[in-house]
Image 1 (cartoon, rainbow, N blue to C red):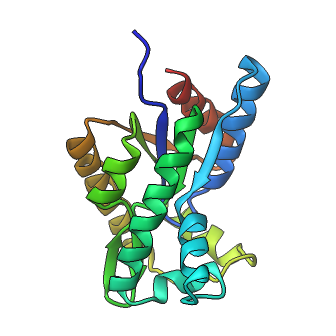
Image 2 (cartoon, rainbow, N blue to C red; image 1 turned 135 degrees about the horizontal axis):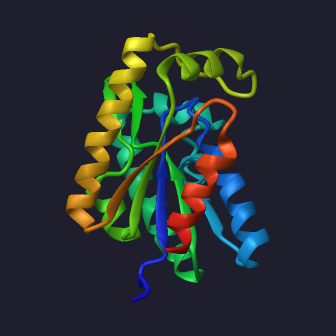
Length: 196
């Protein structure tokens, strides 16, 4: 029996290589099966909503907004993504938790995940030391510094949040390890999840 839901949420903390895994998986599905997968990014949707409202000028400012504004922006972005995801197989690229000045903000609260209704939540994980190294070397974004122990805690908290999403929506939860130099392997696991 084929799954009627067509959305896979893919999460991972900054620096884990999530976007690379997603892009590689989408290419694999296109090359092997000739199918197109729509990739939607909650951060991009939130930026569009927040910038139209005059709250931010770039994406990195989103996590610095007061949490009350971030929640309102999330609601609008979640609704927009749910509408766009009706078109076919979709990956929703996002973070499970966003580090803010006031602690972690849940990136996928109940009102967002019930709107999106994913079939699977995928956590892309990597070794904490590798994540710290990738963040330091990424000159394209302004990344918050985080100790290796805090990166590990962040990943563990993301696991708990993913299980909560599964509890709310009935989605399955899958962990994919993005090991150094083995992005194709991680992407193949994600491609298989998409096509299930």
